[in-house]
Amino acid sequence: MTRATTRTALVTGGNRGIGLETCRQLVRAGLDVVLAARDTARGRAAARGVEGAGARIRVEELDVTSRASVDACARRLTDAGVEVDVLVNNAGVYPTDSFFEVDEATWREALDVNLMGAFHTCQVFVPAMARRGWGRVVNVSSGLGAMTDNVPSPAAYGVSKAALNALTLVVSSAAGPAVKVNAVCPGWVRTDMGGSWAPTGVEKGADTVTWLATLPDSGPTGGFFRNRRRIPW
Image (cartoon, rainbow, N blue to C red; front, side):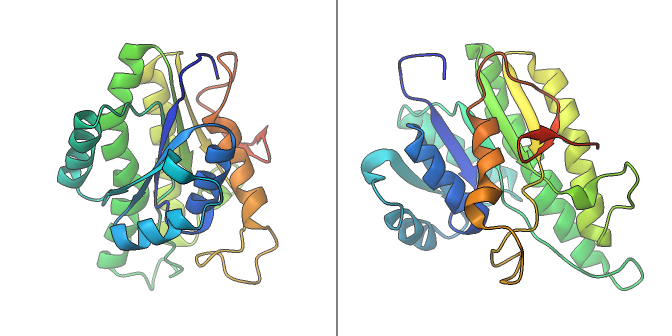
């Protein structure tokens, strides 16, 4: 953190799992948080469960697959005098079909949520970060989308996360060095998406997300990280 005033982070899919834990950790780190969720009732219920949050969490309706929804959220925040300094693109879906089983609707949904969602939010919120000369963007990706010594899988999920990794590099280049844009693999985490048998707790899964969201000005950009260490694309 590099200025005396409080930073504000917007977390998509913030009402559960890694997103909610990231909200919790960012509040503990001293940030104000915009918990963005498609269902505001669920978002408000989730926010009430963040100990000590008080007025530090604002709940906003946001469907990342809809540019109109993202634009409307941005207008409400602007009207309220809220500047988004940190963007955590956490909203995601995890279809598990193999390539020859996956249907077109499932394939499109994976791309709409996992890739186009981050495209929409980055186009809307990152330009203001660049103008202000400070920003952090964290794209929650997966090692299942890595293409180094790996075939992205499951099919739709892996391809969408590989594309998200590519988008990370594109946004990093476009935003300039003052805006740190990175991707993160949180690991296989015990959430509704990951399942109760996953080996990693949600606190550890969100740790590198929070770390990247609060990088110092000397921190990396255009990287892919797991457990706070750079990993291959």
